[in-house]
Image (cartoon, rainbow, N blue to C red; front, side, top):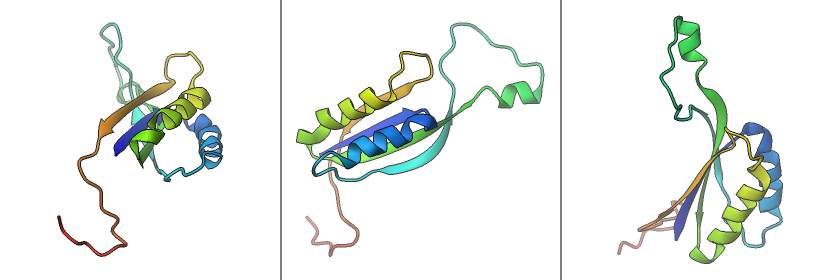
Length: 110
């Protein structure tokens, strides 16, 4: 089991979501609003509070728990539908999930 997280531009969410809907067995996703700032190659100086607060851009965070065999398809869908080649497209990473419990089911313990 893997956890796939992606931070993408909000304008690309509908394309990613539609592509996931066409993927057989897609396990579902959680989407939340996020704000982010890329690492900059130099020191930026903000002379006002407004300049300090507007350094962040709006993003969407997608979180998916998926079986190992679906990871490549899911990562490919996000990349194909969120990639423009421009700075600010976002990031994606995959992590190992040690355990997973559906809260709607009885917990049997392990």
